Image (cartoon, one colour):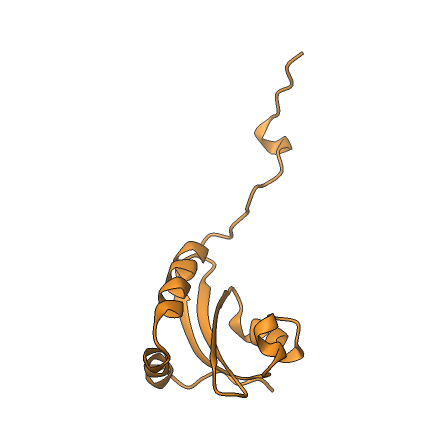
Length: 107
């Protein structure tokens, strides 16, 4: 016996909200290093990093500032941009930070 599923019965594979922006961001650690990541809410993600639950990167040096955000049209574009930024030298990443408008700060 063959089982068929109506489209409404199948679970959504990866529901994406149309028009929902994703961001690539840089966070400065206490030791001066820069961490690059993506999120649909970089301020919330930064708070996670500060709490020690966001990434192992911050175990050795805590997150101190969200210094750069860049809006992307979707998650795929954010991932591609993250890959490009991670390949940059630190001096080039610092140029991105310097060119950014006023950074978001946590309260």
